[in-house]
Length: 212
Image (cartoon, rainbow, N blue to C red; front, side):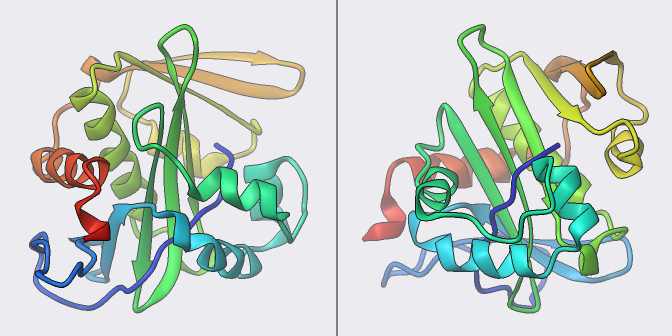
């Protein structure tokens, strides 16, 4: 899976979703990871460009290659705008932070055939804690709530992190030109405990309440 983008303001709190503040406070969903670390997830906003740059700077060359197909360490303004100024309908993006630091992003882009290409990225320091799976769950819930039935991804065949994350699901794999692609039906992924929270929060962002 390829692509990077992060957001802002993680804070340790109980595992409950925040409610919209009366002054436009940003709402996030707090998730406890496998090691007890608290992460916060929320839909991406256009002003998250600088945090995207920061997250990229904390990734190793190998991780950047796995996500972008190259070891590049910078993105130009057009790329940043493309990755952050999303409509949260045909292009959905969730970001995660841990202890106020950009930690990961998950996104999907709906194609002309109705399938959504999915991508998950976790900054090296926070890998191995289950954050990638949390972002994946948020994306699956978003897709299910939007009537999207099939997800697909394309990775380097040596990307074991993604392959481990997809274990237990009925994934159809195909290898071509050195890349491994996989397709999974949304219906084949069990509903998660937080699905309704993810869908409700995404709907609120789509309605634009966060800019009030």
